[in-house]
Length: 211
Image (cartoon, rainbow, N blue to C red; front, side, top):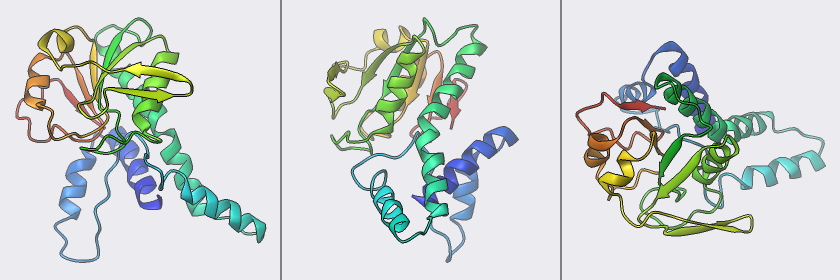
């Protein structure tokens, strides 16, 4: 939780500085020892990392102790979905579009790649924040045809078609599923916000922005 919080904070800083955080991490990985790579993203998901640190922090308070590092990193990680929506808004602004009234395709709602588990998925929080802003959101996830959240069911798109991609103002990649054809997505999308560096092997990057 702390390591992911640190790299998410650095991703926000790197964006302000015009530096590619993914290149920074790849460079750091060349060190033969003493470095473990962690990657930024739209937030934390699953049934462990987003929840268990809260239990430890709560227990620590029974002993009059504040786990300040854990709590600080949780604040950063918990805010990442909102930050991603802010970044999406800036991308849309370049096309003279607002979140309100735009149509966005979210790629992936599972909390990590190539699984069908969406518990505590940050992608769902991203969708929520977009919809609060008046955005029409559709999603495609080959592993999650529909999901249930807070009493409602949201159904995903059955196929990732040319018509679907061309019908949206922005594509946001929130889960790095390996079975998605990202070259196909890039070819037909107006703009893409890749929060997971899932499109790292796509050669034409004119319409791709990284977290």
